[in-house]
Image 1 (cartoon, helix red, strand yellow):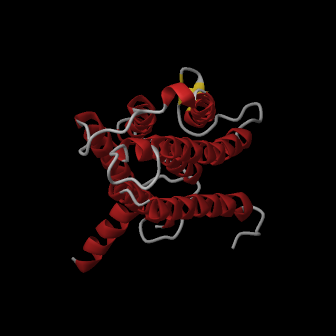
Image 2: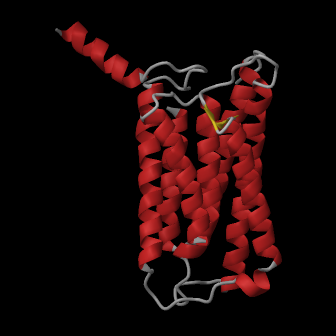
Length: 193
Length: 52
């Protein structure tokens, strides 16, 4: 489960790398895919964070099924969003949005990631007899705390970057070319001078 | 701002899961998914002039 959460967090870090290091602005559909990936990672995270036997009202098996159910639903939604973006750029000659990684654009990789989440979650549920983790004594493991902190930081970075990108507008523009909030603050400062 | 709001909702969901309340977790999780689906619907229908 740590691997599943950290795997998705790794993919999100890759997207942040392309945003901040390569200077590509995420489009609205890219942001929606990030949200769906985070929601898909919430399932295994729920199982990890609720392994203490005492505080639980439900048995470990139920929590296990809930967690992977959450993952599958979010991944199905994310796959629909990523497939929509693939279809937007499917015409021959269309350069696509952003740069390609190993020949595929990030949204095409997103379809693969969501498909993998669904397959892995389905197989994990299929073999749940063997895979349900035992309840732990109270207190979370170091790894769980680490995973939770990394996941929280990635979400926080996305909050700040998305707010910077949209500024005070309700929606992120279809083809963003600047951080709107920074631009608005700069123009406001110039006006006050 | 709406997209940033959904990220904040996901952050609240993660913090809620630390407390172990399944009802609150499930409610926030469904709210997040509904918000993502509605925003996706907005982007689907915007170009057709049908967006809310």
